[in-house]
Image (cartoon, rainbow, N blue to C red):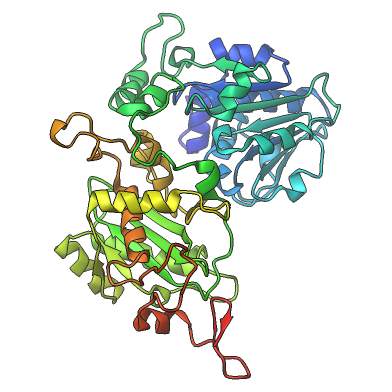
Length: 492
């Protein structure tokens, strides 16, 4: 029985230890193939199994080096590292005594000289300059094949009798490079099942545990490709996807500095039971849009969201260039859903007026699709910066619903049931973020009080397509010694 002073992490450990792998997890422990992909539904214990193997190897092979990695370092803090510290590592283990806070941790140092390094592909210089015996990639679906192959070149530390790259993922499109790599036999695919997880299924009786019943009921409530992938573990292509030309490998990019001179605006889609979504956008000198910050949250009042908006701009720095701190006054416009009460409340608490969004769905979808299309210069006209989410809503995460716009695209499909408008109207489920994207594109393309894009090339005539009020707000009065204003890299 845990003592009354036991921490939450200690209680988690007591529920989950000793760790006994079953099914796919046991197969992973025994497998020495150079590349392994754990694929399966949500909640099958993929991450736990991979982290247990790293921890075991670090203790049994003195001087070995391992790497825990995701596309971005920031995304590891509340995912893999929580599992590792709360469930895998024994209470009181020496590796937890040093290294600082989880957010800042760079490595776990073992008494026998072994080390497990933590990093992200967004900051590869340090982690790619050393060698490892094992690498664990969480959410490998986020990586490019070039990322993957770059990591394999680091597996040459030689302190273990074998070197291994382990990755986990929920399934995606059957055309994804990870699935093709497995189909070609270059990577060993280990299929994971809910039945292998002792937290969900009693391994003696084969029956669902009470926790398993609750968890699978959440997955059973999903629809479309999310249910196929997260409940049944199938690599399936969503049918009738609205934005078929959205490609995360192209449109979802690493974080970068947003120059102060770029015009900025916000879009807001109101919700309470459904998510409230606020998105921050910037427009570069070639007319390309960048989503660089996002709030995606349920069960809050509009005044609370307004407070979150102001706090995010004051503290998280995602819209800053390092030399200044972004404020609500740096936003040139706030484009909102047509909720009169919501807009009035938001205006009162932000101290800013708002503009009603252009909500024509089909026209907006066409405009977004046009921006997603790769142009003659090899780039699309809209991008989404990784790790833009300010706060991950635990209620949405626990129910396996989208927690940000980046997770909505593949499930946003045409409604086949409405014969009158078949193929012309999207299903109104999990569309709150993409609605905000529509508002942003219509605003940037000349609607909702925004500038007008003239000509076929969005880089044409950038000054002429902006109303004087937006122009005056955007230039920030950045005078130099000669009295000229520096605006989007141009002198005038």
